[in-house]
Image: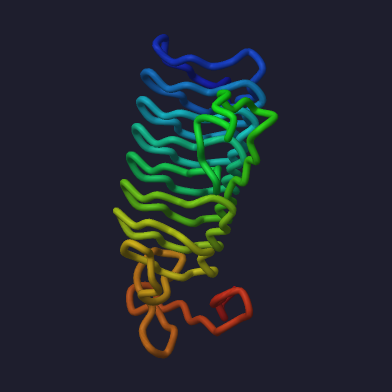
Length: 195
């Protein structure tokens, strides 16, 4: 793969690690300690916080905020204007009125597993796991972890069904009518019966 590409208006810390073939577009910011894996696409105005980790071939669309503590595994899709929060008890100041510093703050980031997709303008609350190949519908507020292949939607996000790796819904028999893959229930959600 070729070297990575950074648009001239993007701000990328010299202390960040950018993988081969990655593209970082207009006005994006990648903070110190962040890892952007090979082949990733970081859209216009995206914020990637300190020590955030993105695996290979992730796509983070325009104006999304991936705050400190968040991990995206390989192949994760993040739609436009998604926000990953990381503070269960947010305050600007301490009880004595002093401004909070990093020493006063408990970061609790989320993990998005392989191949999952987060729809536009969704909000992911702190400390959650979004399972492999899961789908979060646009505009959702995710307040609890999401199983492998699970489809959730709404505010708060609720179970709506199961998704194939091709992103189409599974029927009641856990089969995909679009591509023919078949699935079975597992402790983590559902998994394909096909190799």
